[in-house]
Amino acid sequence: MKIEIDDEIYEVDITRKLGNKNTYLRVKEDLKIYVTTNTFVSNKEIERTIMNNKDSVLKMIEKVSKKNKKKEEFYYLGKKYDIIYTSNEGIVLGQEKVFINREADIDKWYKKEATRIFKERLDCCYNNFSRKIPYPTLTIRKMTTRWGVCNTKDIRVTLNLELMKKPLYCLDYVIMHELSHLIHPNHSSAFWSVVEENCKQYKEIRKIMKEE
Image (cartoon, one colour):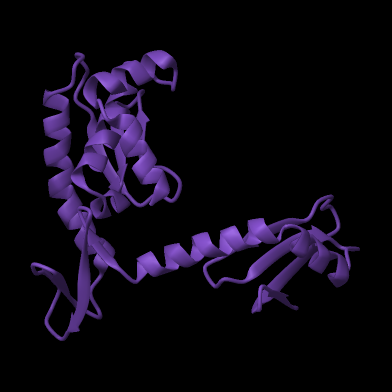
């Protein structure tokens, strides 16, 4: 099925399930509109639902489009580099350009860089932390919904590999945020007071990270 929204044609992928009471709309990386609905809902009804929620659908499309564009870009600690593909091995950062072999594993390269940089920043943040806390174990991995996680039982801080693309002040904020959970394992006002003790501009940084 296809639908026209503001002079653009979009593919609509429909999944009908007998137990579904509601109709759900999503937009994925391929910019198709994915619909999950009840078995007995007609295409006409689906089209009506999409058009009734046109503004929300267009916002989803715009958000996914921006994410797709960012995947084609190269950021390192908040700075954008123009990508130059070469036959040379690996990945080399220049002043304004990054030289990448098409076969290079970019995530593996980021992970190697993050292993060094995240540890350095964790040490710095820990040594400047306003309260006495145990030194946590550091884990680095890609996460889709969170910048960091603190396991207070294991005394472990997990940082999102995607922070390699953000400015260092964003990385430091996330580390201070997770270290603060070793004092308050929640998001109470007392927790945010500890965060503010260690990162005065945390509200501004959070806003910047949400907007990007």
